Length: 182
Image 1 (cartoon, one colour):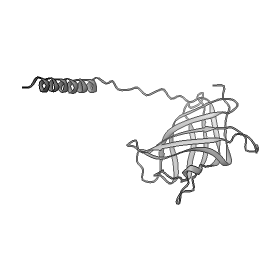
Image 2 (cartoon, helix red, strand yellow):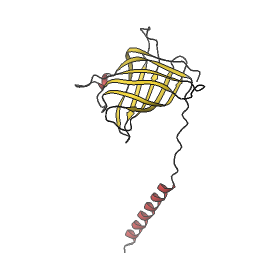
Image 3 (cartoon, helix red, strand yellow):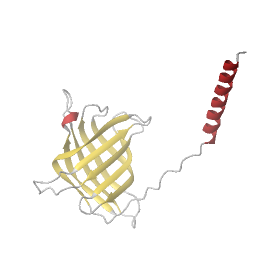
Image 4 (cartoon, helix red, strand yellow):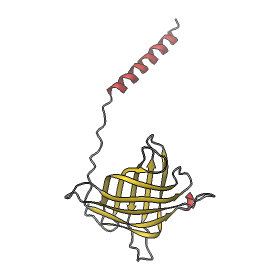
């Protein structure tokens, strides 16, 4: 047999052997600890993203939220979250996305409090629905000038396929995030 062919076969054999050994050697990952801090978020707002508008989508979604966490109480986040009237290009899920459980609710900041949430959701026939959301409370509803509140969300199905997403400024309404010393 040709020396070059023999070396190639041996090299491929070692690569395959190494690959299978690494696969077996991987350790299961322990998820990060998800402890919420004492916080509250409440409000209703419509977000408009011009770049997500097309012939069939308005480029908007509405968030209705009332979520709290009191680590000294039950220690788990609780409340309601709906992402309604999702009408954005490049999103499979349209209509209403409803949070079923909250796994993480953490806020930070005093002057522009920001909250991060994630959990399980339901939307249409999507199975394994998971959501992530962040909300930055940049101004009160009674302020006309200044930086608007910003809301962003991401939704995946059980296979990891993105079904909806969007991040943009509040065009109408207000969401209040409790200030935090964190």
